[in-house]
Length: 428
Image 1: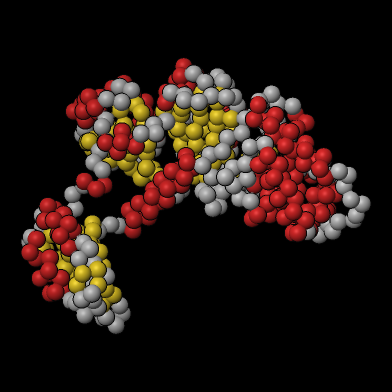
Image 2: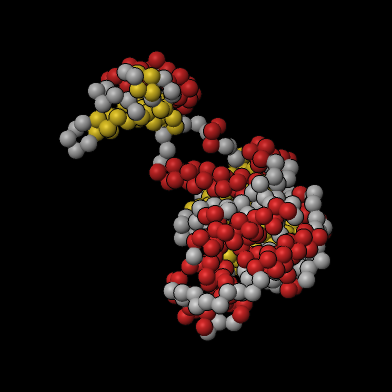
């Protein structure tokens, strides 16, 4: 999910007003990005993209400025600034995947000294043209793997870098610089084969794949008893033959078993590919469901409950039409409830009673909200943020009762939904 701070109304902003902010430390949140980038100019929205199930940061986000000039200044001034101990990487947000996937203007650099970071790489290549993206591949500890990528705005700039700098010494190490080639277009000789019958041996695989070209080696993977594990590898002398074998055999059935045939990958390559697919999936969903709630300023009347943004509350008196409607809906719900019942609610919910005793009113509200939101979400997922915000306007005694009475909570959520529906604020 993506948490959003929307600061003022604005739609249809140009791409040059929107920045992608990557390499974020897991602890960086929306408020921190707002405080950092608002120094450059008025913002429309700030968000950190998160995993839908766990709510953890995916390590990147977006900052939308009111005008392109401020975004450009932020890109130049803030790029590679250290935030929470980690340099952030900024580039213009580009929602059109065809440009990223085309590889135009993209170069690959390898054999880099481990001491060269993104900032140094950017400074080295920026003299050749406008850079859209610059990245050094790192391991799980953040250490350079010795290679990186730079994408220029123009193909001409990329070609110029390859012609002038390929083979040059960077920190006394000769580097290779060439056009970036996407994974699916890269040459390979070694083919991975799986899901074949345990009765097949190396000779059988050689006979099947031999028709596609000269084979240098074949191996069937076996357990400690010498029995086939049902997968293996075929290495071709020519990469084009390996590619034709993948196209020709992948998906075919032998002995009622459908084979998978593809490029053989190292474990780290498979893990990286799975990670990229997972994050791209989350990014697509993040972009398709990103509820935005207007704020007059972040941190005022705004709280995060269980990974969801709760809209500002009535006592702050915001002037936006949407909030005025929501305020009226909340007011009606509170009025319908009347005075809280005289009762002594159980205070055993997760140690909540002792936690409330020494807290300020706002801290109490936050503690209750964190307990209340997941319960509301189970009853009404799509409207959980709005409903939770409405319920939090009730008396604390009533709220504690709701936490300990599923029946009462269900009735109150249904009541809130009716109010939202009557005001056309219900998310269907």
